[in-house]
Amino acid sequence: MKNYFQFDELGTNFRTEIIGGLTTFLSMAYILFVNPSILGKVMDPNAVFTATALAAAIGSLVMGILAKYPISLAPGMGLNAFFTFGVVLGQGIPWQTALSGVFVSGIIFILLSLSGLREKIINAIPHELKLAVGAGIGLFITFVGFKESGIVVGNPETLVGLGDIRSGTTLLTVFGLVVTIILMVLRVYGGIFIGMILTAIAGMIFGLIQTPQAIVGPIQSLEPSFGQALFNLDQIFTIHMLIVILTFLFVDFFDTAGTLVGVANQAGLMKDNKLPRAGKALLADSTATSIGAILGTSTTTAYIESTAGVAAGARSGFAAVVTGLLFLLSLFFSPLLGVVTPQVTAPALIIVGVLMVSSLNKIEWNRFEIAVPAFLTMIAMPLSYSIATGIAMGFIFYPVTMIAKGKAKEIHPIMYGLFVIFILYFVFLK
Image (cartoon, rainbow, N blue to C red; front, side, top):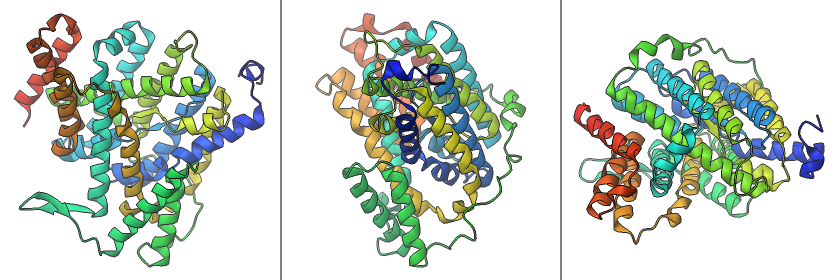
């Protein structure tokens, strides 16, 4: 095993890799409770908890063993919110059909990973739009966090407004947000997860959250969701589902590529500015997405929180294996779902949003032809409550501004094709 994971070559050992894997797990364990909180609005939360743990375990194990990178996977933030609020509740698409969309996006991702098309697609999408998509998703899930916690509420005069900040449950979110911010500023590994634990404890102390009857319990059944993605494939052949599938695919594709490069750079694993075994890493991610959909969860993707494990010394795929095994162990902690209320998960959504908008400083805002589509991509997501709408607006206005600037030849043909697809999206949008 030591030779397989190249410990000597990478200058690491079992102890360091175990600590790195544990650190990564603590940094991303919040998804075990946030994902059921979000998807549980339209699906069985207990089944989602099991699907989340299994998808994260399988994805991390495949990444560690096949691609040998210290990068762990789990259902992605942002896409789970898009799944619930944008697709199921927003467009009225059954959650079973939405899972089929996730599954198909994973299959397409697998095909792209096995072919040379992945580089062409990555290069076809302007860098600034990729950054804007990530930032827009950050704003979107932050808005979801504010809304779910009651900090932001509907207002007939101004559309939205400040909620009852004196409410006990809202104050609990404020407490959790302050605690989590302090932990993150102090660079405490697993700050988001620890913040959720402290918020839940405070909620129980003040009688805002019921004390759980148990901490450890039997593994929850997957029966409500398992296989539904395969039983509804005949429902995906509509313009709405095409956009949904493209959105799942685009966000997963670019988020994964960015995470892989970012983590590999930090770990010193890049060679000649290229990522070794990139195809295997993308294949691990896309496979996890398809398997996760069959289990019953939204898109599974690589987590930037893996950088916490790298900072702790992780350099090999064994760290991801450790994280995967810990996710398997977490299957027995489903009784804790009852204490993880929206007020407990809201700070995690808000903080993750902060982390995701950090890419904005890399956009050339002084170039108006770039600034317009990037800004519309970013701002339309929270204002329309739809990640797909934000992507559509940005991909429509990019060719318009570039042509107006006299740079039509710089636009990749794929972008023209997407321009037509997204125009049809708005034409047929009900």
